[in-house]
Image (cartoon, rainbow, N blue to C red; front, side, top):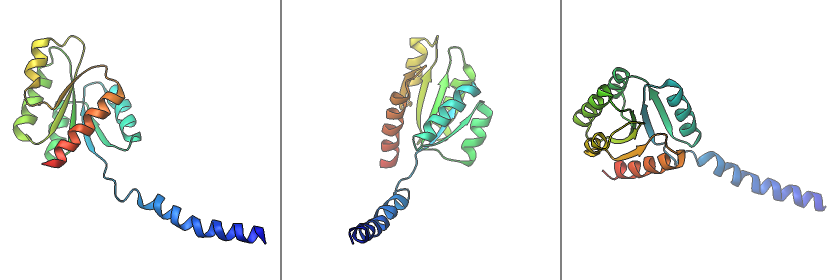
Length: 152
C-alpha cells in the first residue's frame, strides 16, 4: 500500500518537473556573439567556452571573413581581438562602426598595445579589456553589452 502511494506521488510530480525542464529553453534567447581574432586556436577555445555558457558564439579569423559575415548576419555583440600594430584590425573596427553603429563592440587589447592606441579605440567601443582576459570578466562585459543593445 505504501509503495502504491509512493508510485502515485512520483507519477503526479514527474509531469510538472518534466514540463519545466522542456519549457525553460523556450523563454531564453541566447546572446549572439561574433568573435574576430586572427588566432584560430584562441577563437576555437573561446567559442566553445562561450557556447557552453549558453551563448550563440561564432568565430572568424580574418577581417575579410568578418565583413562577409556581418553583411549576412547581425550579432548582438562583437568581440574583436587587436594586437599592437594591427592596422587591418583598426580598419575593421572603423568599418564596423561606420556600417553597423548599433553593434556593441568589446575590444580585447593584446600584448604591446599602447595607451594611445587603446584611447583611440575607446571612441565607439562598448568595452576595452586586456588580453589575455578572464572568461568571467568577458562574460560580464558581454551581458552588459547585451542589456544595452536590447534596450534600444
